[in-house]
Image 1 (spheres, one colour):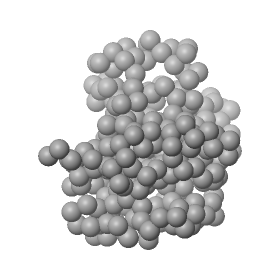
Image 2 (tube, one colour; image 1 turned 60 degrees about the vertical axis):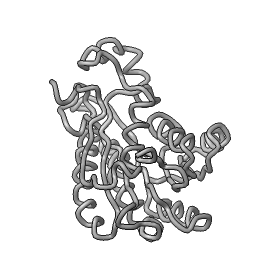
Image 3 (cartoon, helix red, strand yellow; image 1 turned 60 degrees about the horizontal axis):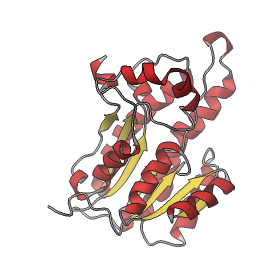
Length: 252
């Protein structure tokens, strides 16, 4: 049982891994002995994160299928397999209903919904290469509790996109299970991140009070969930959407 949550020696790719939840997950895997690749569209952030965490960084704008394919190709040029793909790269947009622009739908859905699909498909050969019945490869999609509940803020395209991510997770779990690949989603609540910074600065205490636990998320919370899904402990879990939100969604 001592190695139940072990991810040492696994190869993990974390998109959007230079900030926020993606960086937390990347750090958690790296510190646990995994070989980690992080991607972001900003080359300087990729280089900084790679140096600080001791991981490999590849700059890529994953809002296009071509860049998803290139990322998979570059990782494939260095690794014979990928054990864990974390589809975390995402965008948000907030505006009143009357002012919500078409660009907000294109930008958010391209990155939040199409990218996880294209990336999973692009990485399939690498995911299948190391997958076994006892230790399947893992796809972990990062959703949101705003895809489970009606959000307080007018983030129409974001909440719709995360609900789509949750459903895509279930569909891919059905299709990829026979290929020895599990597909699950983590639906985080509020965590300290660039995306949440302004909201937490304005109303952090009120948001924390919404949770029965009286706080917002900490890095270890999402690291623990991702380590569970990526390790032997999570090998029989697929098609699940796991809220990591201190009970905000389930108790309101």
